[in-house]
Image (cartoon, rainbow, N blue to C red; front, side, top):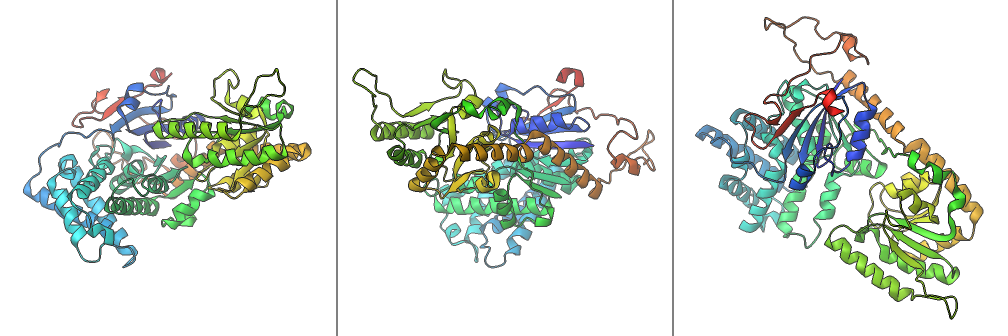
Length: 563
């Protein structure tokens, strides 16, 4: 079958979110054909290029979310009137308090969204209209209408401009020319690897061409938006309106998707809370490459029996401060215990947090020497992957007898699964999908509780037999549930399920332009090439820029070029 793979800030870019997972999926499903439609987030991402593409990728089309296109063609009076009506309806849905009628905002939002999409298709795009004063004034009228959110009434011109700019960026997929019969319309299904703008493109392919949509969320975008827009990040009116928009967009995506595949039960509960029908939800755990941890997993004796290890990205959400205070409790019971914190800090906030943790470690644990002629050493070390002490990720997990996770916010705990593949006993805080990942193979304690974290660590440090049992059970669980092979097999089965239940009803014409009867027989839905290879669509405009679509790169990928 032919898959339209929709990404945002990810595959096929070298520096992209979930790029490794997408690459493994595409390479693992070599019996299918893939067309990749990628939304880029930054100029740097564009400049760094793509990863090598396998032969089953027919072509890649890209569009930027980080820069605005020109205003496009001018609109006549009738088009401007249509835009005003649709945008006012959209803004009204965003501003309406959901407690009045939970379904009314969703219905208004969907109607307005597809109305804007049809107008964009008729007029060649809406970039200028979405940035116009007309949009801001429509948003202002919606905020002043009766029955709206209380905080929306407080919005002033600067807040309205901020919200309008955000909506313009989120709605840029409306103006793309991807929804023709020789683009996404030629796919058997669209697979959006995230929510938000990428899934919006899949909604439009379904609206215009009837292509079914599969949505995969390993990190729920609505949850990520809530976490990133906490108090102090913007004015209350801005935060309320943007939260309402993203909630309505997520609800529309979940309502229209043929199947939704969260990566864990935590994400699944978020999706159900936002209106996803549990009948159409299939949990597919992330696939981890187990081979690089095989040597460590089969050699549990490599671990230092008195060392705790933390591995991950340094960030305030990881709560290393609580971990350091917990380790102070551990040292009172186990004076020779050590803690190795392995991870890098990206960004100024993370760098400042790392500095704070290093200062705290120096205060809690002054450098100690065993004798008068020995050099003092701090029992807490901060290291990075690639250094002389920790050359690889597997070496980081191999360094300790117990792997600790102290997060206060977590989605799916990748580092915890990697530790399980290494056969290490784990102590974790009960956040996100931790319990789902660990099962009964590790100790779980409440978050922000250094004493409970310390007691669990001491329990395992003093009981090597229990550590060995838990580590072996953890490795067996990870190999059963969290490998690349199980991930690919699950998506292959889901692809077949979607295509068998929601086949695209497209008409194939012959040389005379007349429809060909029985051109798509029933056997075409069975795996394998029963009818012979179909002709590949040549991307319009050739390589470089698509004709009539400024700022959108398009490239047809030949198998020999992909190699």
